[in-house]
Amino acid sequence: MSDNSSRKKKLVLLDAHAILHRAFHALPDFTSPKGEPTGALYGLVAMLLKIAEELSPDYVVACFDLPEPTYRHDAFAGYKAKREKTDDALVSQIERSRDMFRAFNIPLYEKSGFEADDMLGTIVELTRKNKALEVVIASGAMDTLQLIEGKRVQVYTLRKGIKDTVIYDEDAVIARFGFGPALIPDYKGLRGDPSDNIPGIKGIGEKTAIQLITKFGGIEDIYKTLKKDEPAFKTAGVKERIIELVRTNEEEAEFSKMLATIRRDAPIDFSIPEAEWKSSIKLETILDLFTEFGFRTLGR
Image 1 (cartoon, one colour):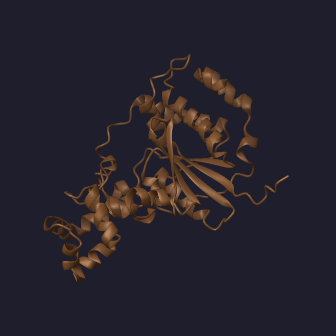
Image 2: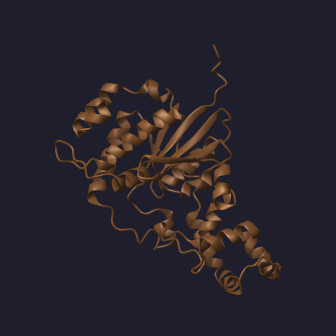
Image 3: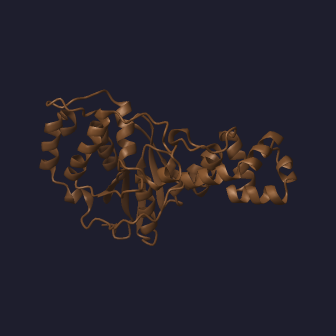
């Protein structure tokens, strides 16, 4: 028999809203026998079963957004302003997902004034000293790539729909962007993020942002070099028009980076669940809820 005690434990953090949102748009409008919308909930459960099979987590927790504004909205009235109002059918499923998480015995973390991403960042920070733990963030959003650390913290994300998933570690982030996870907020500070209505520097796109960061580092370093040695930008092949855009938009870049940076200090009381996830699940509770929602195939 092999000694299993040296195996690292795996904690999966679910970005509940991102997963439900993705499932809602990827799946048909299913309804329960009572006529409740259930497409997003079906997708959430399908994702949970996929995670159980592919990742074999020892512990699972879910992080939630709350409807009230966060400190980002207080700092910038336009934050997420271009998003359409959440569909009522999705709102009701976000609420019902709490019953689903309870049935699966998955604890929930949320905090007024913060986003689910900040819960994820804080839990990553609070578990940093636990060398026997690996963390996998399951999300439909790419913002969380900034939380990746080597192979200790990885992101399991949805590429298309809810079936096509990909796992990012630090090497995969570098392969995709040309720089490491810590510089993702700088990247968004330069190019912005239309999905969150983060402005960035108008006129700077993906390629230019990557060029600036790979040549000069993060936003603070870019401005340090610009003030000390502007010719270095021309030597690196940066066009005059871009140098001018960077020069005149320092405040916008720094502010956008702040909006894009996931907080790691949300005031939550986090602890690893006492029992391992699979041993704490009561199958009858789950099957009762599946019957209520009409999830016959998932029940099987």
